[in-house]
Every structure is written in C-alpha cells, then in structure tokens.
Image (cartoon, rainbow, N blue to C red; front, top):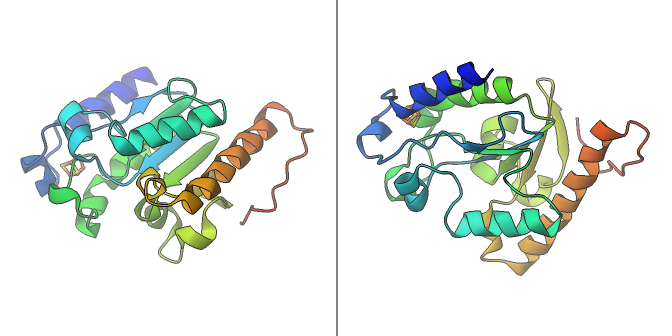
Length: 199
Ligand code: SF4
C-alpha cells in the first residue's frame, strides 16, 4: 500500500491536469496516517497550506487541532487530512466544478487506499462534493450518511467556527458524537445513540 500511496503523492506533486498548477507553490496532497480511521476532507489549500505544502496549518488548522484535542483526538494518530482539490485556487475562491472534476481521481484513490472507518467533510463544498448538492451544512452537520460503502459525516468548516460561537458549540457536539460513533468499530456491543444517522 505504501508504494501506491507514494506513487499517488508523486503524481499529485507534478500534476498539471488543471490551470491551478500554474499558480500553486506546492500541491497539497494531504498528511497523516495512511491507515487512518478518520479521513478529514476540506475544500482546498489556502495561502499558508500552499506555502508549506501541508493541509490545515493556518487559523483553520489551529481550530481543527483544538477541536480534536477537546475530544481526546490528535491529527498525528489515526487521522489523515486532505482536501477535495490539491492546489490553491487564486484568492481562495471556492473551487470551481472544472477543477474539482480534474482533481477527483486523487481523492477517490486516497479514500480507496486509506479505507477509513469514516470520512468527515469539513464545510459545505466538501460535503456537496461527496454527498450531493442537496446537503445543507446548517441542517445536516453531524449526521452520519452511508454512501458507496462508507460512513460520511459533514461538519462546519473550522473557519466558520472562528466567526460563530453557536457553530463552535454545535461542532463540539459533532466531534463528541464522532468519538462515540467510532466506538462501534472497537466494541460491537456498544450502545451508541445514532439518532443523527441518515441513510
Ligand atoms: S488542483 Fe488537482 S487536478 Fe488541478 S493541477 Fe492541482 S493536483 Fe492537478
């Protein structure tokens, strides 16, 4: 598996499949445990991510790290973090469909190789990409969906938590629910309130 993963990483680093390769400093493949239980997917690298080639290292990354720490998780253990597109869109505009389509094979292959217990979409754009345009983050965050043989949950993007204490409280509950949900993989007899679940 490691070899496949490294091949994919090299492919992304040298990719020129869309125009974003012209303005990027670094393609941001993603970072973390290649056998992760949780795969976090954001929308696209920002300025700091583009400079460092690492996902979620700016303000949003700090918020994400704090949320993980608050429920006893950390990005270095059992977690992989990436984005639906691997190169920064100029001026941090929302990734357009053409770029998402050009980049989609990389995310699909990452999901196949990592084979996580659950995929977490961070923010509206990532959730649209994986769950479809009817997804509404304000209404549907924290719900578990089963799709294509995977569990998928959408959450607020960490940047949204910087702007709203209410979103922060809701996101904290979603992280707690995520932690409870993961117990089902370790203990099949565990009783989990899965009332958020939606097929
Ligand atoms: S955004 Fe994706 S498809 Fe476009 S150049 Fe970067 S890696 Fe390639």
